[in-house]
Length: 387
Ligand SMILES: Cc1cc2nc3c(=O)[nH]c(=O)nc-3n(C[C@H](O)[C@H](O)[C@H](O)COP(=O)(O)OP(=O)(O)OC[C@H]3O[C@@H](n4cnc5c(N)ncnc54)[C@H](O)[C@@H]3O)c2cc1C
Image 1 (cartoon, rainbow, N blue to C red):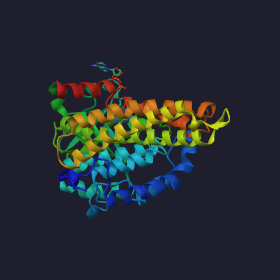
Image 2 (spheres, rainbow, N blue to C red):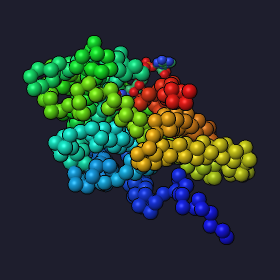
Image 3 (cartoon, rainbow, N blue to C red):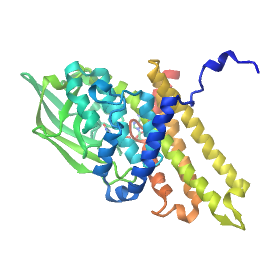
């Protein structure tokens, strides 16, 4: 057989040996540690503290943190693999790991000073959850209309305002909070700060009671004359806009991975059911109409995987990935909703009840089109690049 000159280029979805080992260890963890807790965590709307400790022990809360700071020294693609694999079992756990790695740690690695890295990275790798606080009641899609103020007083900034919808806030010890140092400067006033949970004037408010990803905490943050030293500005004053946008460009690939994993989990349940459930004297999977539905779901998943993996690999390669990131999140969230919906139908009545994992995956899928920029915002970003 002739060896093609292109054989040296690995297919996008081919994993290296290290990636396979890593994915297998996360898969086993998801099976042994996450799966038995999913239902209870969803009902009780919280992440089991013992599970959180185990996520730290396995290194999943500091995937890209260099080993010198106690992290796993992995790649962005490894974070994507972890989020995908965990989300196949519980998208809430996938999101916890996603925000920690693809938003908080990514922003820190890119923009923090050496002192800030020394201060925060070992904590984030070992026992501290991070949160990323941009949205406000009046600033969602129009995120840079934010009203939280940061007034400079001597060597400090005094933060006042409210943040809304902040993931991980119940568990978090470190928050990246976006505020404006000068409302009249528009987006040029926006600045990112590290705010620690026990800072005077800072508190975590009401927790939202949600349709899906119920174990993941989503809360309001209240800042009342919250004093933060100037040394806790991330990047530079006035550069928060760039930090927020560039971090979210990567974060969206993480949400794509969450939706990819969710769809894979839903398909696995659908296939298992179709192979065991008999009607008209045959297993459901023997009917061609059923096979076609499962094939359609698998095709949606393969297309999603190509988009998500390609965007992640582009990011790791230091190449342009903004368009691919927006496309991966857009497509993945739509595909996940389609696949989870079909999975409920494949399971029939037993897919519609709480005992069924697909009932939860269907509820969990909806958020993919909303956070880290709604689907319309992804289309706007794609249009800006391609037109
Ligand atoms: C569970 C959950 C977790 C979250 N976690 C975080 C977090 O950790 N950190 C954080 O900062 N934020 C977080 N968010 C906030 C999230 O990013 C916002 O909800 C999202 O950006 C949408 O903003 P909004 O809810 O204000 O909706 P809006 O911006 O009010 O949008 C409502 C609708 O109008 C559409 N729309 C808006 N503008 C336009 C336009 N110009 N043209 C056409 N259509 C438009 C939108 O696409 C959408 O369909 C979270 C939200 C949820 C629900």
